[in-house]
Image (cartoon, rainbow, N blue to C red; front, side, top):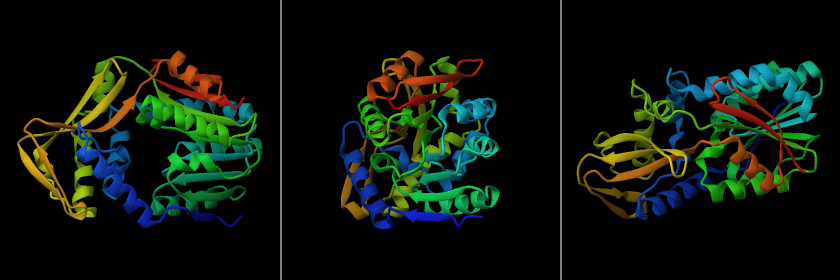
Length: 323
């Protein structure tokens, strides 16, 4: 078994600086916003794992089903020797691809990237034990900047699953995909998972489950600010809101103040007023039409080569090749 490597490219000071900058900009903007990356502390990550198992939350199981059916075909088409995964988390779904790569004896290296040191430490150890023939090289970094400096490898396939691309605005998506394309060489590939536009009631329910798990997940971001920036949000005084924006074609998650309140963020020396009923956006999750996401990939220099879609046309896995 090869010795696993864990490369830490993001320090605690980097994370703290990013949190302070995001919160300062978001809470002083109009309307107020917080970026979704701060959902995922230990409590938030556990809540998200619960969300993925809820009956309303179809994206995870649908994407996993597509990968289970197509893994051998994907690995064969990509000719990948190295798989790099952005935002890998536990790497659970990606193990379907690694299994296929080991069966085909083509994939020699797996590079999981994530912002969480603890999650990646656990994953790297478990993956090295499960796949003794693979070199496992974990990278602790921010994937939005990691794409500009991908590690070297033999015929790389970058894997970006979970519909995470939908958390970006159109301009952010274009910049991200352009940076990714610039980091790949001709013939290397991107495997992308995206949610498709379907019945709005189905989409909204996935972000507003009947058990209230997503509501707790959404409000947890305020607990992160209370703990890490010494803020004094009254977490229970905010309601979870999820809605479909048909103009922008995305789901928005928001937190709505139940009453007028003044919030202080001690570490920033910031005082923020909330009016009763005021809503703060915490996430967008864009859903796509195949023709629109194909056009975005094409414009970035990553034309789609093969597409797998579930029977209900709710999710797509796309293999795009650097032109």
